[in-house]
Length: 178
Image 1: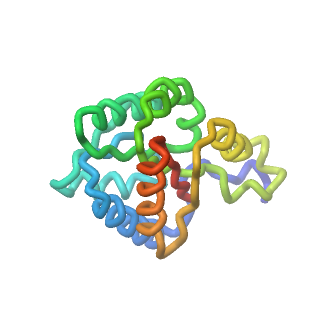
Image 2: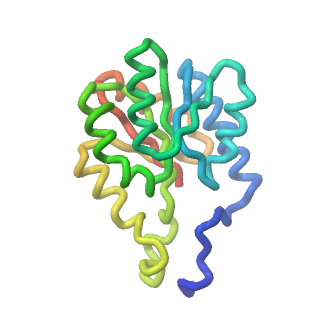
Image 3: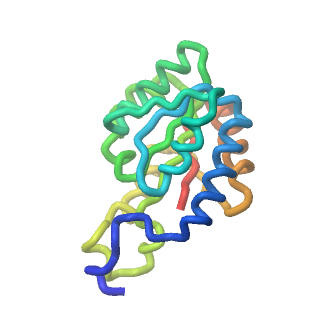
């Protein structure tokens, strides 16, 4: 696939994205989440739309992903149950905020991170278009952040397992959305 025709916009099946988003939202709500903090992108926009229409959870949009960690950590200190949703590009820019808040404060957060570029990792000609995917998992490992992938049809299970692990280790755990 030539690099010039690869789009940075969501190009998947809209029906599949909606169905997966609905399963993800059900999983989030089952965790008794009070606030979802983050920055929507093309792949997570339906999740945000569904959450905004649910009165049991407050969606807190932020300008930058680094703010998501700080706001979520503050909510946790205040007795709330926050959940972070961002994209991997924003995760890479938010490292110091993550270190200074959620990691430093031992906040048991679950973060759903859209793995932009995942499907292009095996396509060497795509490197010039978007290299974020090649840096993402090594960065998660360098920050010693546990992570797992969502599996189609088992989204809620991954979210529940991540929440259990976050509470056990008292730190954020990442769930990757491909």
